[in-house]
Length: 256
Length: 264
Image (cartoon, rainbow over all chains, first blue to last red; front, side, top):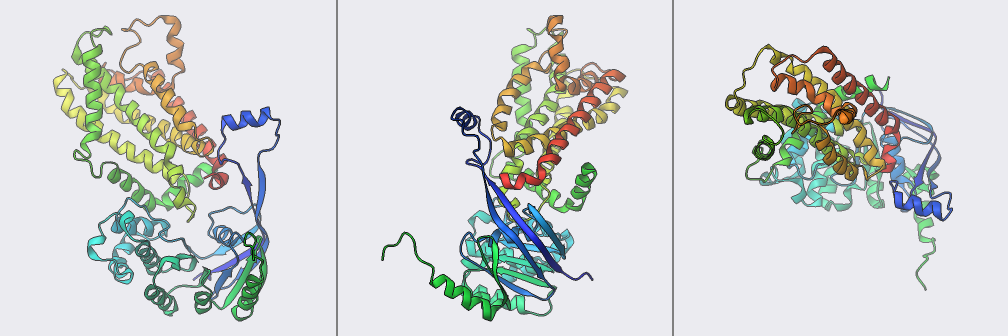
């Protein structure tokens, strides 16, 4: 069996910021008439990020909003091609980015099970085999199963998404704030599921603002800000430093 | 070769593709009373209207012959229209999905095209069986060449789908522009009239020669309405137009695909 591993070398990610994402004739005319030569600017979402994650690691990514956490996850998941640097990944990635990602809202829970399972690389027979387990784990009431997902609560969608992902023998799991809408009962259950030693889970990457949860799940922590790594090390060392820095950040816009 | 790579990834993601096609077919008529019947009613209504309004004016010998002629051109045209519409918005509409998990982008236009192709085949088969007995149609061996005409049409439309789905991500005017041009295109393609019997002056014939759809529809019309095997030069024209369109459409996709995600 192949060992799951993630290797990033000097990864840079740049976004071109368009005033409006697609080209508009009116804007182009207005801009050229006003002799504004450049209507785009570059935003550096990630700058020179190098890191390596080995099999068996459980990692928490922390950082303020807009620090580049999600961008980093999306580069690892193959969603964003990096602008520079090298990315080496072995292992199958199961990204759970935001609740209910990868669902088609008009389709029913059961239909989504098949769509989502297929997206995660499972065969139809494999999905049929684990359907009952997923439903039991996600605690979806029977009569909801053939109802379009759009009528589900956010928590229900999260439970279903997590349930499918965990049943399909994931190797590298990326969790981006997916527990934000889940209740304590489910978070407990999910943590227990991830702790259960029988799974194929090799690498877990968690992004969360819930530092208690981060401490519960991860052993390594990477603190990111302004698109770069501030600190990388054992969670007991990095989290307190990060928390301290956050507390000492001035609060612009609030007069004291 | 990116083309081989893209075909291979379609195979690799075939389960996703199957799910997307199924979802498309299911969702379009979910919660409608007539359901899938709508795909049949729409061309049937168009054909009825065209026949009542035009057949005499356009110099056809009989209403039956006119119905056969319109049938042959209208169904491929509807396939093109519906696939173009679906493909145009296919990548843009799946923005949510594409930003959260890696998937080859061309799964979406291909899925829409296949779903519309299914509609086309179903329509064609059912309407053929329903209409042809009433329009004094005598099929001959030329009917055996129909699958080739269908295949060529599918290649052409796939190319269009690749192109419009990609371009619409960058230039969202594409779908609006499409609706205008296609309206004009319908009248510039000999579907409800025949170039000869409508007595269109020779100096305007170049318009039809330049219109790719003229060449793609012609084998259908020759097989179904004239009961002849299309001549080799007509096959060659149709095939040439289809291949060139496919390669251009795919080239547009292959060139812009990598940066697509940043434009969604």
